[in-house]
Each structure stands twice: as structure tokens, then as C-alpha cells.
Length: 308
Image (cartoon, rainbow, N blue to C red):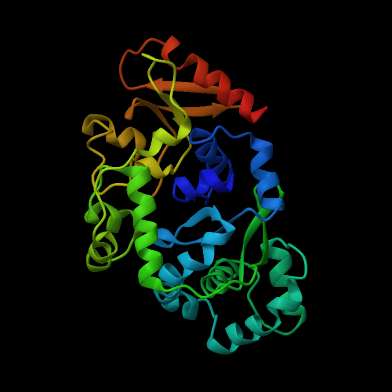
């Protein structure tokens, strides 16, 4: 799992089910193997590119936090103040976090234990989410294995050496090119949320062509199309400044109708040919145009088996 996540680089993880599908599309991977990788400490999730949760190999998290941690903390400062997360409250929380997180906890359990020690965090609303994101940006905690369905567990981030932000950004850019290429510095800046200037420096000396995101998923048989059912928020649809090369503008709103929601997509040889949804344990594909169903039948069966 860690190898797959490293090659991606990083898997969108605000939705645990979509993250599993993201690994599977670039795998092969089994659903249970993702949970085992979390439990074994091979992968973790934290707020990174564009301030969004990403699943990454545990060993890559501290270097990535050197790039994104302070940036994300600064972006959330105003909202923390509005939520009553003052410097005094945050200071008390950070002081007792190592003691409180002696075991993985849900966010509600974490806040309850902090308040038992006099921290004073409002347990409802958005304050708990912003508190955990703040501590994650400082490298104190991260998300690990789910404790229950849709209930992520929070744990202490294992100690590690500090990383140089410029070097870490350059290493991330190299992995990005390998996964997403052909791309340029502007694509990297749009995907990462870093400035154009940082993107250009990170890209210095790199080629703009890589293997492409689906090259890591294992090639199909000779002459067969490469078909993938991608989960919501997949990096493939968030990895470029312009989606025009993979998604016909006529159908763009059927994948992203507005806001931050990016629907699950049917992708054939790199082109988005439809969307899909889950109906119980079944996959329901909704192609944009008339496409033979046999084109995606095997992939549908594989995803349904993956869930099972």
C-alpha cells in the first residue's frame, strides 16, 4: 500500500471509501489491505496539498509537512479564532496531547479527553476539526486506521527528522511528474496549492513528461483499453490546471457541478466517459454517450468484488 500511495503521489482521503478506490485504481489493492496498512503504520492521512486530507506513506509525511504544515496552519488562523481556539486553548491542548493520545481515538473521544484535562474545546461544531488540523500541521498527530466505518482514528505521528522545505517540494514535484505527466509548473502549483514561484523552483530541471497516473496500475492485455472506475475526489481529476484533455467540456458539470464535489468517474484510456454511483453493493454506470456496456463490465465486477 505504501508503495502505491508513494507513486500516486498521495491519495485524496477526505472520504475513506474513495481513498480505498484510489489505491485500488493504481494497485492492484484489496480493501482489507488498506486497513492493514494503516494498522501496521505503513500509511497515514493528514492535511497536505491544498489543505486537503491525503493518504501518504508514513515516512513521507514529515517532509510533506515541511512544505504544507505552516502554510495550512496560517490559512486556518482566522477561523480558529472565530471558533474560540485561542492561543491559550491551543497551548493547553498541545501540552497534553502526547498523554491523551496513548492510543488511537476518534475525534469526539480526543476532544472529550482534552476537556477532562481542562483544555476547553467546544465539542460540537467545527472547533474539533480545526483543532486536529492544527495539531496535524505541527506534526503532532495524524489520522490512522478507521476505528469504525466512517470513524477515522487519530494517533500520534511517529518521530522523525526535520526536512528542508525546498528539497521536500522538489521531491514532491518529481513524484508528481512521474504520476501525472505530461505536466508543467502551473499544473503542479494548481494541484499542490503552492504559489507559482514555489512551483517553478520545485520544477527546476525536471522533465515535463512522466509515465502518467494510470501507468502504475498495471497495463491491460495487448490491444485492450485501460478502464478504471475512480472514486469521488480522485487526484486524476484534481491534478491539472485544466481538465480539458481528459474531460469534454460538454460533460464537465456531470463530474463537477460546482463547489468542491467531484463525482466518481468512468475513465477509459485516460478519457472520462461517464460517471457512476453506488447502489447498495452494485455499481451503476452512467455514460455520457452511448458506449458498449461490455467495455466496463469487468471493471464493475472488480469494484463490486473489492467492496465485498
